[in-house]
Amino acid sequence: MALAAIYSLFIINKSGGLIYYKDYGSAGRIDTNDSLRLASLWHSMHAISQQLSPIPGCTGIDLLQAHNFDLHCFQSLTGTKFFVVCETGAQNMETLLKVIYELYTDFVLKNPFYEMEMPIRCELFDLNLAQVIHKYRVALLGR
Image 1 (cartoon, rainbow, N blue to C red):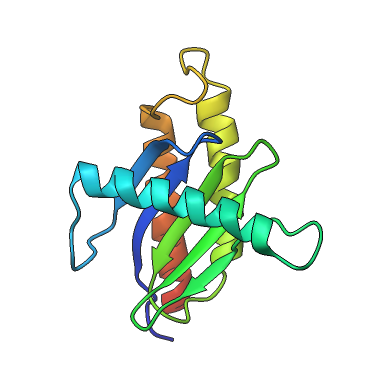
Image 2 (spheres, rainbow, N blue to C red):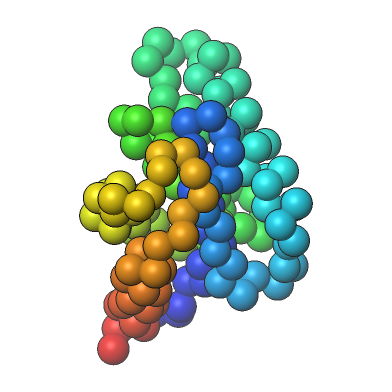
């Protein structure tokens, strides 16, 4: 099985502010301002989709498929959004996002020095996230 590339990870607070961004070697690297704009745009699109849905109880966009990439989103009960930009057709992204959410709850929210809604600067979160991404990539390779 071919390795599905994860291009980037964004975590957005309930107000639409970017609190975490990690680039995993995407072809078109983006600067800080562009990552902030993308996070804000995704937050707005997600909110608008909830309002425009003809089906009551819509929770927003979970998957956006483009020609060259997929964007998978997981929204927690508190409104924090986790989204991954990945290779088209990547499998098990919903599971990966839930694992990332668990890391967020374990290493960010339980950190007594973390202030809610502020940018994430937590070394343990970064280390464990890198391990999870590595395990995910190895699992896809079947090693």
